[in-house]
Image 1 (cartoon, rainbow, N blue to C red):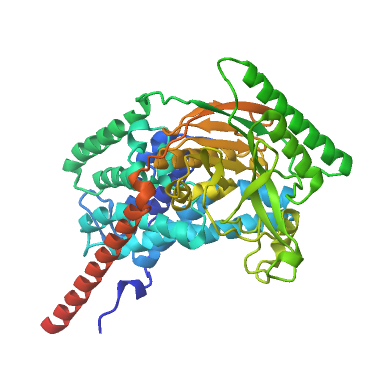
Image 2 (cartoon, rainbow, N blue to C red):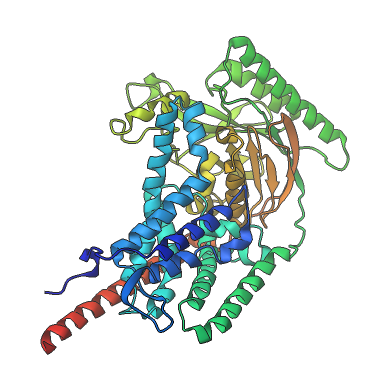
Length: 549
């Protein structure tokens, strides 16, 4: 009976050099994303991990020069190596989860650390699966050609799984090249996954240089690094200026997440925000260069702004009426129990639309909620995290991504971290949205790199869909983003103010907008085909060996 590689648990130890390579790869992966933001390392960050997977264990013999002869990792060894890399990567880039859970979620230090640890253990599995699949796709013996060809496809397939299965595609690899004007434009066809594929392809070439005989190493290494240099040079390309014929006022409220609300504080805050908005609109109208503002946007807010509360509705309506402008505001949408399908009131994380007459005309309810923030999955299992949910609330999911119609404009409004989902944001544009609006409260992240990571992912959505994005946040970064992903205007963080944000409407759709994640699915199909082919060849080889014996 043929024994499958997956069931052959490792009996030999992993060589120490493989662990060193995993550590190096993990460090480089962390440095790719803000705040370090050393994007140039994207072309080599995964090469040490790939080499480690393919040179992980001693073969039991020495080469002529006395060095250890190393062979590819067994499947479970490969999983362990890559899993370790994933845990370290998430700990290094998503460390802000600890502060969010501790400072705002009400968890004690040990439980907040435990939450971060469990988070890393869980999502690090995707790196582990990449290592496992890479090992299963490997050819016989030390033949690395098959696995090297398969690696970019396998990586994109794993990124797609991370997006669809766990719902946390934070910092997809391609986002590291959001400032690369030449390379990032392929996302209008493939989404961010196309850039991830390109980055991994170069990493494979760099890794291959250390897997071939030494006499060929220099040539291959020079060629792969030259390819990386050419692709990286796209960051030096200046994209053409895109004309903007409209102006929005993006209000950065700068309301602390943990503020204590009283009736007086609540009313004073709303009065200040309304006066700030109206004054800015009046000043813009008096400026011949700016002209009338088309839209005022208030962000997702930590304040208890309920759409049914007259104390909230009146100042917002006054803002729209006095500024003669459409207003979009973050709020808590609620359906009283008497109008709900259940016996209890339902609440939503919402964006409300108010017309220039002060009437509340439409609402978008957030569809993709934040686990452990806006709802608690598996309440019994994760009861220890209930403090965070008490702070934020138990929200219901919305059901529609139809644009909000504001006069002659169709607004695709999405809230907070919905911006990290490529396939979901593109639905707004595919349904006719002419400009995208992201309302966010990034105050939860504190001063960590998360706010900058979030901004880069939002910028990538602008490129994929060839749309302007108006990003209004509570504490920053509040910005106007053009279809090339450039922040053409922004406010300093942690300041209350109004941004005069230029933008334009467009109804042209990209290939990606129309067809979604076709490229990622193609990579997944090719990955499955490669694994099935390798499995078939292995079974045939086993039968042939049995016959010959």
